[in-house]
Structure formats: structure tokens, C-alpha cells
Length: 249
Image: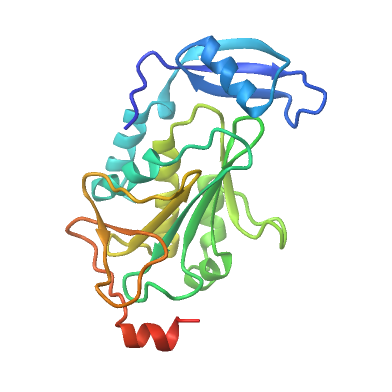
């Protein structure tokens, strides 16, 4: 969990002629650092609007506690939430963060659940879950439930996933908890499954307390590290023979 002492949410209007957004917001320890964040994105002509203290789900501890007490998520998921949050760093529009699920019964099957996110020009975080085809197979009432939770339906073939957006300042812990809730409830993702994450720096290679790196202990090697919840994971990796028969190119 990130140290948020002395952090505030800063808001600006953007006046660059070619800017993709009219406003920008970010969390920073000072106005100077907030201006640097805007400059890093490419916003040079900005006007400061306000700075305020963080509140509600902008506070990491509040979001984490909410996830732990949420009956749809629960405390057993906190180590994965912490892993997601630690590497959820989208400081520039267009950069992405992805978490793939490795179902414990068939970890290499195509079409497994995933969640992905990117930062939009306003500082908004755009989160998606998929694949929609699998969602439709698993739960016929998914559309109603996702609408209730604030998710928007797919737009077209270029935007085929359900999505939800978070205003600047919302904690990464809350975003991670939102993703987990949808994966658990709608896709049936369980604490037995494995998870692989990647972000700006590539594949995540180091875990956090309560998370273990999984090793198939076979002749084949994983393309990226797969993690599991300590004492819960039960990923049944295929034998080398089965892997070569079903999954090797």
C-alpha cells in the first residue's frame, strides 16, 4: 500500500492547442510535482484550478479495507490486490496494464479471463474485463449486474469489452478491487487460479507477501511469471507431453 501522507488531488485546465483533453487531474505531494506530471504527458499550457485532500476511495487504506469487508471479494484476496496495486502505474496516456488469469483446472486454455487498463488524457483510468464471449457463456445476467456496478457495455468490434472509468485520484487499490469483484462474480475466478501481470516495465517478476511464484516443474518454461495466493493456489499445469500435444506451436 502506497504512502499517501501529504498527497493531494490537483486539477488543471489544459490550453494546449493540440491537447486531447480540456482538463487534467493527478495526485501529487506538491503543486510543483503536479505540474511536472502534466508536463510529462505533454501539457505545457495549463491553469491551476484547485488542490484538495484525498477522500473516500481515493485513500488506499479505505479502499483496501472496503475490499476486505466486501462479501463479493474478501480478505483472502488482499495479497493479489496488493500485487495489482503495486504495479498499477499508468503515468502517461496510452500506457497499459494487464492481468491474465490462469484457471487452475486448465491454465493454458485459450479465451481465459483478463483485465486491462490504460490512462486517458484527462488522467482518467479506463478499465476493461474480457473476453465478452466467455462472459456471455458463463452468466446470462451479466449485462444487468455489470450495469448495476457501473460498467458500460461493449461499443463495437474495436471496443469489444465491458469497461468502467475512474476519475483522477481514485486509488489503485479501489481500481484493483473493482476488477477483482467482476472477475470473481462474473467469470468465476477463484483463489485457486494463477495470475500473470504486465505493465509499463514489462512482465511483473516479483511478488508481495501472501503471493507465490508458480513453477510447472516441467521441461517447458512460462513466457511470463505466474503467481498464486499462498495456501490457496492449486494450478494444475499440464505435463510436458500434454503441453507439447495441445499448446506447443
